Image 1 (cartoon, rainbow, N blue to C red):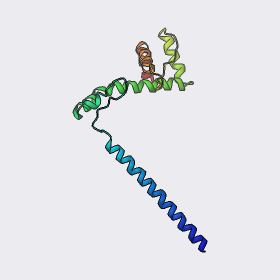
Image 2 (cartoon, rainbow, N blue to C red; image 1 turned 90 degrees about the horizontal axis):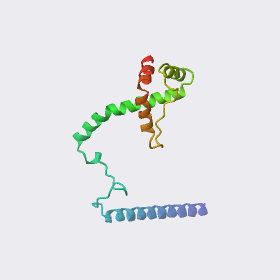
Image 3 (cartoon, helix red, strand yellow; image 1 turned 60 degrees about the horizontal axis):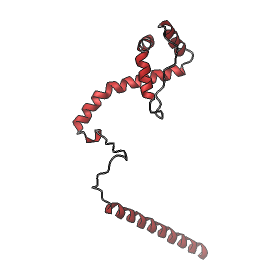
Length: 142
């Protein structure tokens, strides 16, 4: 029992020591952060790009969000349509191909917007402009 009590005392001392070391390290980091020049204006990145939205006041941000909402909705609808065309191989995809053939267009798949491909949004929008009549036809059938 004496050995067990001594072991528990050693564990408590080790725990207290590690807690103290952690607290000291935390305080040191806080001091370094406080001594850093926080008033220094840093660019958003190395290329000198600036976040223009951050420079707007609250009313201007609300107006901007209201103005770009229709664009976001169109992009969302095109993304959903593109996804459904690719993944609905039994219903929607054959109907899409038939609509394109009826409009004397080459049956092709709508490009998908992929976040890792920098130009995919443009490709999807460009395709949508060229195939606007087919998109209108397929969305009216739904």
